[in-house]
Amino acid sequence: MNVAEVPIMAQRESSATASDTPRSVLVGLIGTGIQASRAPALHEHEGATQNLAYVYRLIDLDALGLSADALPELMAAARRFGFNGLNVTHPCKQTIIPLLDELSADARALGAVNAVVFAPDGGTVGHNTDWSGFAESFRRELADAPRRRVVQVGAGGAGVAVAHALLTLGAGEVTIVDMNAARAARLAQDLRARFGAGRAGAARDPARALAAADG
Image (cartoon, rainbow, N blue to C red; front, side, top):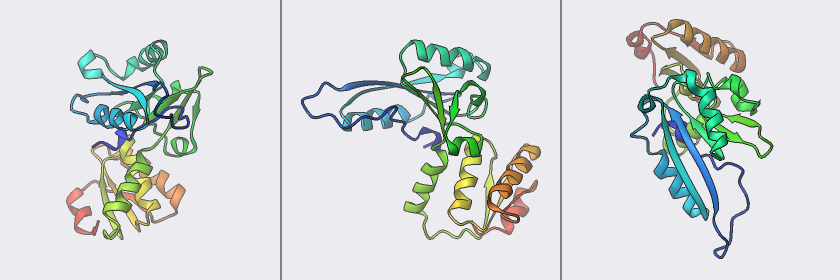
């Protein structure tokens, strides 16, 4: 499952009693090539356990014949149709930021958004749950995994979050490999600024990087 698909329960309220009418919640996922996403089933199942009339829609740019340039139009349409929030995945996690009114501390630090909440006053708040979702899964399933030297392939929106999580979880050094060498170098520089010198670097040769890695 893509870490971008961590459930977003927009504007949570206290749990309703069994006799209450379920509150309606409408959420969607914007991205490309997402038809196989399990996010709708995940969200709607969780919504049912919270006594919510929870509907989750896929907004697939490929299926609609659109690009990330259509984000302003899609955001406005979601507002008009009463969406409570949106999940965001590739290629929109960074391009959506200028369209938002506010960012959470995590989203601001990482420069990537995977969840948008539409506030009652009309504002939009961007969050990043990619890093915390990955970190929690790592703690549960890979707590004993070696992480002295870790190689990560990918420096996009999800990669930014995962690298942050790995260093937060105690990885000694994370080496970033990406087809876009400049993007890998930027991410490594940002990580060093947050976590300290020697904690991150960029590599052009995956095989060579992996030969020195234990994670």
